[in-house]
Length: 202
Image 1 (spheres, rainbow, N blue to C red):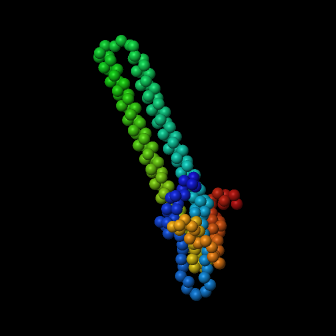
Image 2: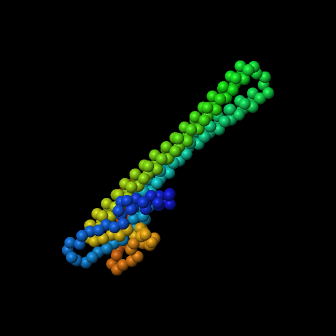
Image 3: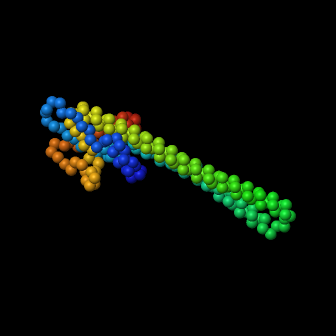
């Protein structure tokens, strides 16, 4: 699931401006910098994992409903085939043959209608789920961004770099530096402190 979300995560990271959080240095004191792996924070945030589980469960429901419709289509195909096979070699008047052909045509038309409805419903359900997933993930990234900003202000950092991002030549924007503190684990721990599952174990 994480691999599935990696591309929209990187895209949303750019859109949300998570590459850096800058603070004005007011007191002229020592410059403090920190680095945080936003992608790792996002993946290990308990709300992200819950959302991924919810999405997986919804995908399962969509697939289950689609399998049910596919089963109905197979039954319709079987009924049409058996009807045609039984009619082979049976003597019928022209009127009886015409009525039989109309019946088969109606059955085939109903079968095709069901097939089109199935395809449209399956596509719509997945599109809706993908849209809701993107909205939810964007909201979670926004929450993480605000938390990092608040943490940076509280800790007195002048700048916080996103160490998970890459520049145009596919290298991290910050390769290293003196006095740059890694705060990824701290951010993850503080964000997950609200996890109801952890509170239940206490």
